[in-house]
Length: 445
Image (cartoon, rainbow, N blue to C red; front, top):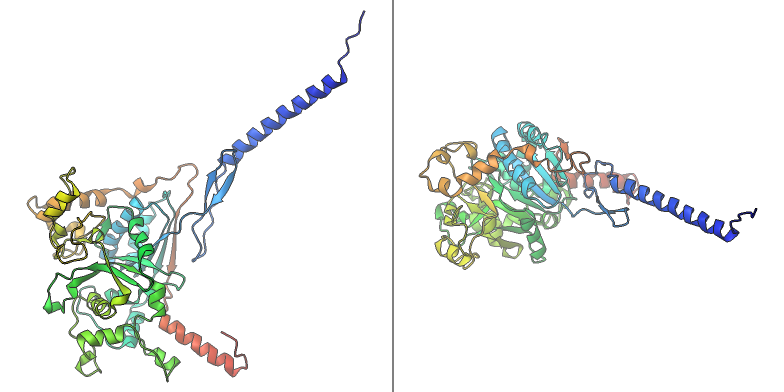
């Protein structure tokens, strides 16, 4: 009876084939497991970049791809009412933003509570959201204005409103630029469109806001020719060029304290403070805007105008008579119907609204509660009432658009209740340097 014999080469071939099959199965299982793993969430340092978002590759592995740099906002909310308005602004930012967002809020305790209560509903944002609450004391703000020496305000925004002139001193020095928006406004477009304007500016530009040279308001010293309601602020340049005066600089360099941008600008437009240089300005109107107006009128080289697309305002401009409806109209036809564009940087260009600003709605602390929204004949309500109601009624929980099982992002909130203005920090560093020299360590900082 013949014996059946398997050649040695055949055994080797089968062994190799079997090993190859096992290897491929392992690779497939490993690849599948690797693809399903999400990144662990790491709470970032104050100045760190957003958590990278993993990008799966075709062969089943991941590589961390850095997220885009965040869009940075600086806002001021001082009261429950202003925070109620500001929360709608933040909601619109999260609704439309295509990138991570950092929001710095200069606020009081009441405002922080309101904003935190809203943000607590946002558990799975599509993009990372980080919020810092900077809480200067009332006395600290008074002291900073006192060290400036010449400004005061007659505006309803009061002392907190003047802090718009000191945002660059309140925010940490690693925050180099930001978008400022008043609380009575909200976005109807991606905020990245506004943020990207920074990339188009001249090297010397540090301030961008809407310019209305057609406005004539001598009772306000023509301060209505700009609007400080929406601003692009190059905070690094404003720090370097020292936007606002402080008496501490004379203590640091008695022989050569230097001059702030604001000092000659204020005097050129308003004369000596108090009339004799010993008091405060009593002839400045519209609060901080009156001071910004003096600065940009005197230092024209640091200023560029903002497109009216980002300042569709109900005050003076009548929202340029644009609004919802007539959805098939052409830009050419739309331009024919718009007003307040002649002799402005917007002349010849239709306003295509990207941010709505509902200011000058008197009779209420919260613009969403304005009586005119219930008047079917009110022109502002006809044009924009539906937009206000939609954004106000949009539920915060609808912004939970991240993956339910493995959300990549969450809202991170931090509180800074020990705000120190930049001029005070400069004086402290100077005193430490003097102390170090006394102890024979001239290189200590």
